[in-house]
Length: 239
Image (cartoon, rainbow, N blue to C red; front, side, top):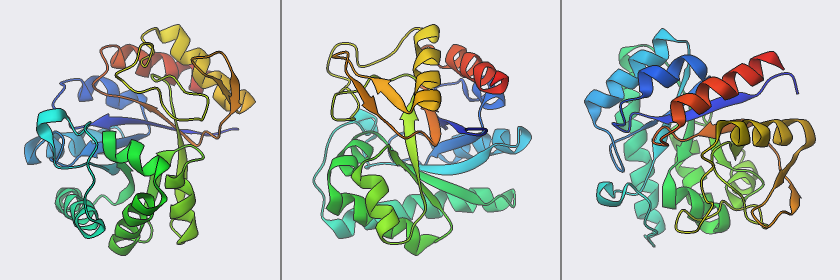
């Protein structure tokens, strides 16, 4: 692979956006439902423009109290509406900069639930396509998120993680469990290189499973996010 996208969740009020933005190629910007507000969204978009970084929407359940990480079971119509509303809000800001939205990435519980729930995945994909059929869905590699998007003609990008560990079924290790997070830069880089070069990842049980990586993610709220961004950027640039 000669080229791969490197994305990070931004606009979440963590305070590291300006330090991370120079090292990534895509920014998924929080739209106010799990974090952020219009001012932070504007600041994140302006940084993306400065560093020539693509901008997408990081959409979530409306749950700032829990940072969007608590599972919900909402009616399909409500999920559809919350996706569309967040896209509208961010597009109003990107329009100020005459900058197109390029992708949409669900956040937290919405992301993980849609990866294993084909109905929820299809609702999200439909909401995105109805808003703008040229948008790309970022979803968990080889999950329902990818399959359902592609089934309705929406382009999808298999997302892999540098700072999270994997279960044997290809899902992310829940944050409530030990070893869910990778907190060593060398380990994060090694995982990224293995995914890109070999198309595999080692799970927490030690099993090697196949994985497809088209965009690499680090979480902007991770305590080592800036270090990871620099280290991964350097390795990707070298290779």
